[in-house]
Image (cartoon, rainbow, N blue to C red; front, top):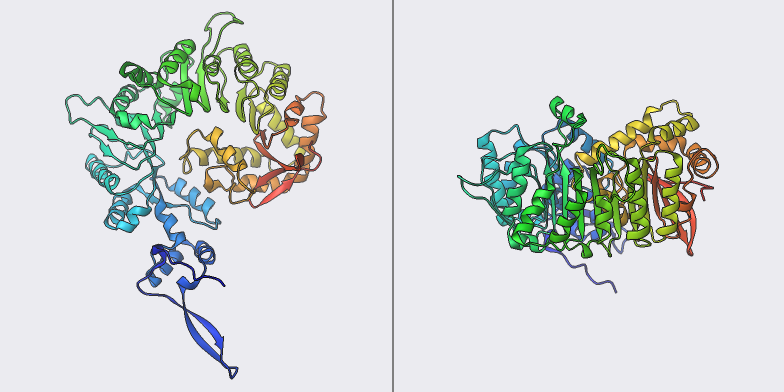
Length: 569
């Protein structure tokens, strides 16, 4: 006997939208029987509503007086704000073929109206979980910015918001934000200035677990804002922190590009050391499990490692991302005994499982030895995820990295390697082998992917480390899991077309390039890792499947299908 399905409050309409169902009477004639939309099983109702476009879905909600259908709930759950028409067009094109809704994309000018509508309804307020700003809101007037801040403050007091990505340019205003349910916060320190002489600001986030800080290089406001932010965060807000990440905001102006390309980097240090200096003076020590740092740090690797050891419990650190550039011995000859920030930090991380590292700024030999020493001495047979960027002087150095990974990291599950020294040559060899008529597909696809990551779908923490593990750890491979909208593995139409057109030649190329050609560096030691499930080389993601403890297939996953790479072993 099948029990009657329990109706949730989300599915209880005040006026039912009737469905017709034919029943057969004793005489053989059909009797029309009214059925309600709520009589559909929840999975069927969800699939039907998810297949509708946004406009059609809202029409169904209005007609049935059911504003809280599962598919409609997603429209309020995640709100993305942008002023860029190009980004809006890009997001719509990428999500138009999806079978589920992923949120609402609105213009900044309509955000206040949307938030007011949400706040006026208790049920809608309970649905909102994430508000994300894709770009800085600089086109608004100061009065408009003030209205926005007031609306945001009112929303945080009412809405059970879990995630807020705020790049608001409101430096002349005091921000008094209290959000008892907020767990993920990302904001720009360009927003803050020292509060002396004006109304003081304060932040109170008792459940804050993830903090991402955007800054601008060579900006006095970013430097002062970093110090102000560290002071603003109350003791309750730092007690629950598990993730802290710093990321530089890239500007598009010619002046900023000239600064970025300038050879003199001594005066463009990153701002995150000032954040931890404030914590050190206050006696605060964070119990973090994930830490992400970037920017130029000069020759202060040893000093910064000591600073971090006093403000962060490195023994509890599980995930570390270092996108830093350092001058280990500027204008001096190479010293075999010099240590980088990577070596100094990983020597204090006995529980580290996920590591992402980028090279030093000036010395390729220091970069090479630092990575080898880290893998073989500091974290041997310890990592499950490694994403590394290398710049090897010769192919022998790259081969040494492969050999070191294969011999000292037998627990690796996810591996992503990028050799900048041979990146252009590798792509050229691949394209020549494929003999494609449109060589721009591959390059355009990689660029398209980076634009998506840094624009519409930028709400991620420690992206390169965290995303792949969650995907591989799923119960079954599913194309929805790998969808671009999941912030997991980024895909795009250009790469899908490229792989579909060339997948047979691509399979032959990977076999030959990685195992046969003598002049190429072979990652065969890496391919023999017993637990490896994900490998990314040359911008192509390769997934391995296991059968009875042995590798059964090597597949590329793009779009809605898996492409079997026969013979890759």
